[in-house]
Image 1 (cartoon, rainbow over the protein chains, first blue to last red):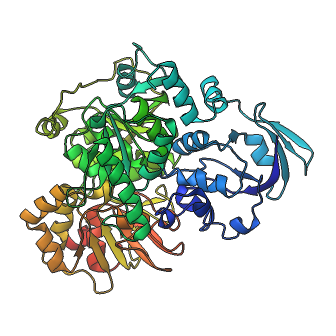
Image 2: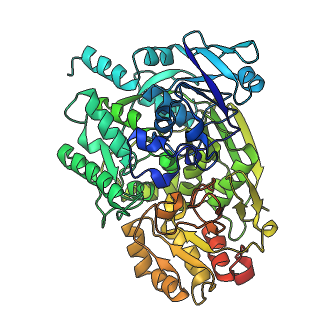
Image 3: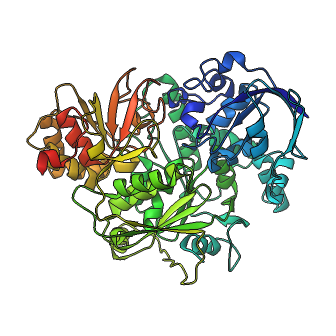
Length: 167
Length: 418
């Protein structure tokens, strides 16, 4: 069960906004986190608390393939992102590195920045504790659920290779 | 099946694949660069295998922050170089490298019918050659380096038909900017785009690379062109291995069919801060600029430089403009040199650089200060993309960028050459 305050953004938040390329000369998550959202929300890094939840409308994470984007968000303390839709490369990257994403139009429409949410990942249940409302996110396709429960792509790949007896 | 479905199916053990289906796809080439490789290498090492699945099918290109701009980026490039040598994978050092998406097709490493995945969003560029090419993150690339395959969700295909003949100074850049403004930056989210029509048939391969390159700016997973004589001509002299040409079936199912008549289309300019915020150049004239960038994986090929030289030759860059021209590869640089294009650029007062992604992503070689404005042939104009979050980037084709560099304001090339 995840619980945290909401940091809310609009549509088409791009990966340059999440982590500007000028900071991509390093790849350590903690370093990247220091500059997360800097160009569109200068105070984000100061405001964010471990477990907080990021929220946006459509096409979150569009632009480049930099995995530094979900790494920065995760290392900044965000426990999950709820949006109406995600850009596809960002979606893969986040799942691969173990940053949970949920798609839920109603939760995004009815939640304001600063609200406190409680999220149960496996059922997709989202409770807005500030407003006393409850929503259900779109369920993951079966394959994605398997990937997540394996612990991400690297663990999944290790298991696949082990079953093929390659290693 | 559509072109995308045909290629994907041929890389699985299935006869047929359908949109929405999860499949494991065998890959023909895996790519990473100096920004994405370090994370891919870290994750690859975590898997616990010693060697990549096939060193001939993995390529690493240092292009984003090279020649290295600072110590941190030099460390990242070093890490990648050492891994590449140890694994004996394909690697292009500074002096041989180019911007990855200019370099790989030029070297014959990407061929029609291939499935290519790259830890760079503009990997979709290779769709110009009738390949299924898509950008992914570093961890995906790490897994594929270990196994030689990757999971994908089969995308639905949007067919885009372009009718009419293109006007003067109108190129693939204008078609794709116009398309993105029409369907939006998520108009093709999770989909493959298939570009057809008589305007596409007449388009050069370089212009097709430009269009496929920016499919990602509409959210697409891939942007594909059918193979024709132009493709065959481009590929024939470069290919070092056999390749297969796939055609979409007559009864292929498309999620959408969009038709445009582009005969009256003007050169397009995407205003800050979205590639979808596009207007015809005649509606954005008289905006002063501080910098013009001609280059990148979008427009750094020989045809682009020829067009720029046509406008810059015998003229002078405006005294208040920095004009930066970056050939996309050493071969493009050399060809431009032999043709006299580089001389024309230098005499016009432009700075010419060795290949690098550099300014496109605000890395180096043309970073903008607060309040500065740049017209650029690159692919993104997000907030802070080229430097200060208070700077502005306008996206255009090389003819518009060159003409604007001379005038000191955004203008149509017609104003200079008629």
